[in-house]
Image (tube, rainbow, N blue to C red; front, side):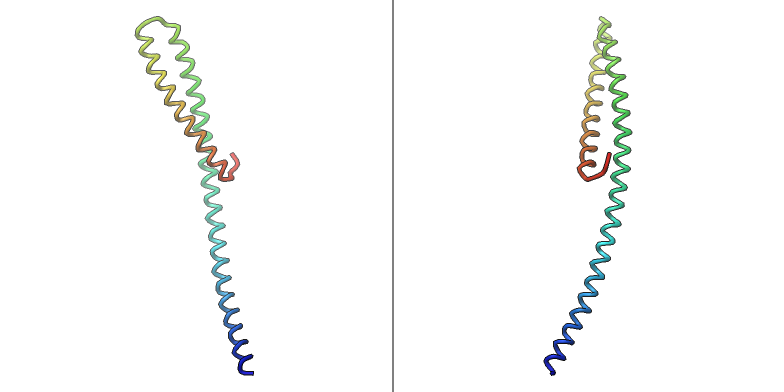
Length: 114
């Protein structure tokens, strides 16, 4: 009988410990869910800003291509210098575009609809 009482008491203590652990794990899970939702919101916000930048980059790319086309029709040395400068700008725009596209791909891989 004494052995049974000890076993019952031990089981009761184990259950109490399990209940405490369950409460802690539930709290951790809830905190994780909250953090995940905050992160998802931050990713959605970043994605919309990236889309805005992508649109501006595309607009600038079109303008630069038009300027380059016009400069190619001018035969002067000054237009050649301007073409070089505009071509550098075009290269920089392309770098930004690639960076934006890469960042958007990463957001998409994280599971956020773009």
